[in-house]
Amino acid sequence: MAYLGLHSGGAWKLFRIYCTSFCIWLTFAPVADQSAQYLKVSLDDINWLSLVYMIVAIPLSFGTTWLLDTFGLRITLILGSWLNMFGAVLRFLGAPSREGFIVPYPVVMLGQTFGALAQPLIIFTPTKMAALWFPDNQRATANMITSMSNPLGVLLANIISPWVAQTSAQIPNLLLVYAIPACIICFLATLGIRSSAPPTPPSASAESSDLEPFVQGIKLLLKNKAYLILLLCFGSGIAVFTCFSTLLEQILCVQGYTNDFAGLCGALFIVFGIVGAGALGLYVDKTKKFIEAIKINMSFSALACIAFAVVSLMRQQKAAVAAVCSLFGFFGFSIYPVAMELSVECSYPVGEATSAGLIFISGQIQSVLYIILLQALTVRLTDSPQSTCGDAVLSWKVPTLVMAGLCTLFTCCFVLLFHTRYRRLEAEEQATYGTRSINNSATDEHTPILDS
Image (cartoon, rainbow, N blue to C red; front, top):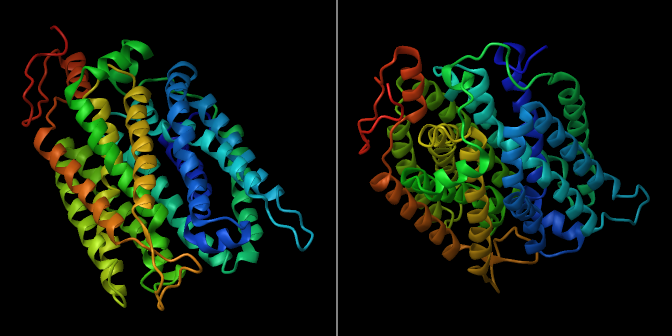
């Protein structure tokens, strides 16, 4: 494999690296009670094992965008693979094999922190890879393939963690299960990724060297109204899905649902999300209707979030809970790769890593705020006989309703306020034919981006 392109398996290499990163991120969330018992800490401390990814990513993300634009895909991905592997191994090695010893919580947190350092290096790459390696009629699909390793990693974590760690004593086995693939993927990435760009650019934008420098690109983004709306609204969507993935088991156990059922709901959430993303990616590649697709899917996602806030309060309603989780994933996860491509379209000629990276930073900041807010709104229950939550039983009624409200609010803002031109497609059209024939019917901007 000489190059990182689709024909040499480049998108699938990124897919494998992504999956491993997101599995390690959510190792403990599906088995929060067992992890808390084994590590002898509270559920809030277990939640911080996921939150550390968001906190570390916020300051590191700015350096990651610069690293991608300066050193390219190859160096960035290999560095991310090594950090991810080191964090996974550190978590496992902190567990002595002698009976009676446990993994110290600070060691686990340190391993999670190394994994958190790796995640921005990996997660910022899909739009850059799609822009450099694929023509305009394949970019959304390529982005979809790599980006959907995010939910697949979450899916695997929701399946593997409850299956391996059915009791608190099995947590060390769980850490070993995640450390082995991290080492294999690091080895494959180091030897298999040999180039950051193909010898022949697939599009006019990939061939162009007119992308704005990092600092100038940041300034342009902060003056771009459409981009700022996308930054805020889609960042909120990322935060809602992060909260859902992190807190699902804790929300459902109050009503007597088991960890296995919570894992099944997480799996349905992801599987239907991957199906939706595949369909939407192909549709957008063919029609270029980025805005219409995102607005429709965001609206249905908000409705699904409201439905989850209602059915999660009901006991013995497994079919309803599973159906809502499936719909939430189908409409919500499918937005991600298309929105990342839209962030590049509305901000061109700002670099892909910069425009997509700030979206990710917005999502991480809002994720931290949302999870802290939702945890603060929980109320300890003194009597809940059907609960499967262990010692700490918390009411999530108000937090889930607040989450649904936030999702609805930002969806309405996006649907009503977001309008833009597809600047990158226009630039490619003009470079190829000398005219601009691609326009967005929803736009309120009519000035050309390049002079003929």
